[in-house]
Length: 96
Image 1: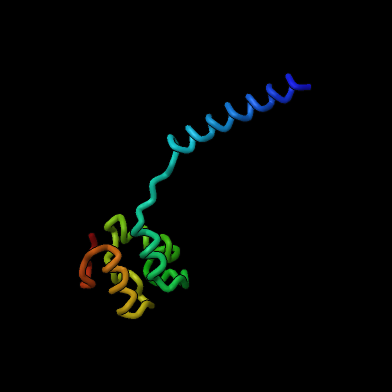
Image 2: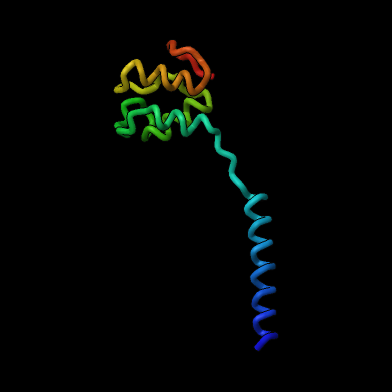
């Protein structure tokens, strides 16, 4: 009985260490600006900007494919908030 508990406990410790190491090796780094820009966009996912949704538009802004004024339905405040998240001015084509 004790041997079985020790074997199962050992397997659990080894599996836990392996999973911990794997989570560090395979961790996906996400740009913090992406969350800020997604939060600034209205979240309507209308597609008027030419992207399939607000998350895709935010990703395009972070990658420099679109400017901070990508949101067509957003007010000028949205473009300013996106530009502030990118650290740029809110002019036409003012990407990073």
